[in-house]
Length: 194
Image (cartoon, rainbow, N blue to C red; front, side):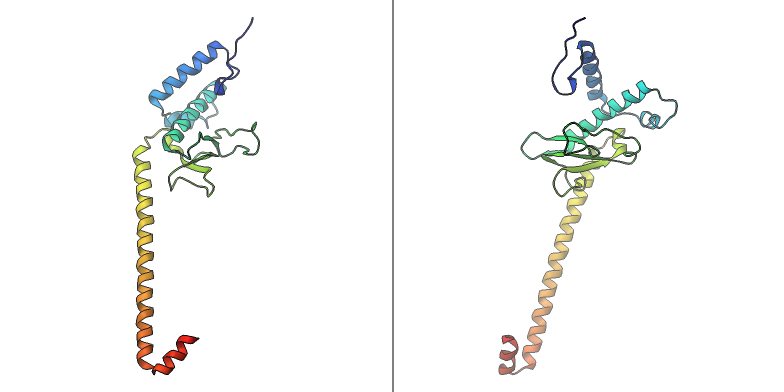
């Protein structure tokens, strides 16, 4: 039997029926996007079958992809992402969802994208993450709220620092004026030269 394989992206190596199944699953994931908490918890069950486990991991990969595409800010080029357990220096060693590692928080790595703070974890723009519960919860409002809260706190800190600097300058000026009032013009000139 002569099989035809697609040679593009994630469909590489699949036969026609596998592609149809993949597209059907993908389209279904786009409609729901979320997995259930029970599905996630079943990954830790002794009774989950290999097929069920693999199907849930595939759903998780779809949900994570959706979240990354929604949150990532591209740096002007097409970006790529992977789970942060991938070997970045080796094209053949991709990351994968590890239930034990990502029980509470999912780390993402890649190139040419950032997540808004506080979800951006790296100083080089290639490390980010989000709570695992976003796999089964709506995350959009929480995300917007946390980003706004972070920006507001950052702005408040900047304003506080500005006020502290202004207060320090005023104290220094008052100290200078007090010292100048107590010194003769020659003493003041000598102090200022040092």
